[in-house]
Length: 106
Image 1 (cartoon, rainbow, N blue to C red):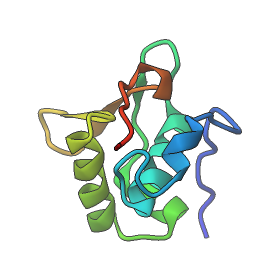
Image 2: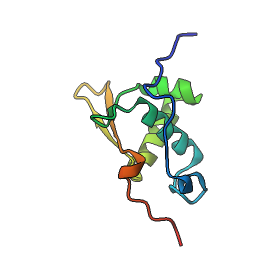
Image 3: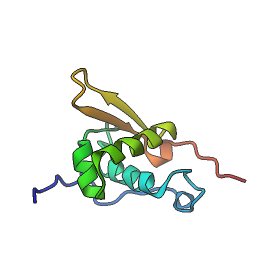
Image 4: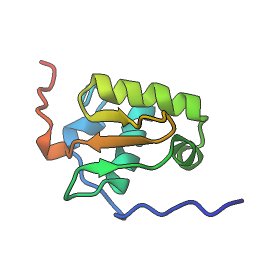
């Protein structure tokens, strides 16, 4: 088995109410991916670029599932996906939890 790159942070913080089912309006898999992306995130630029294959290995899902989860995160305005011209590389802009306007359901 190949060694996977280690995230730059060992832990991340998110608002407590996001841990409830209605908190962030995300599936549990998308919530896990968001945490993983926060761990890879460069806190100066907000960018990260782990491959979908790497993320898939870390979360134990196929890259196709990672693409679907990234789309869910994009729809929730938590990430913005930038594809390189060659289509091969993807750079993600990941919002920090404190930068996300969150209104819990009433």
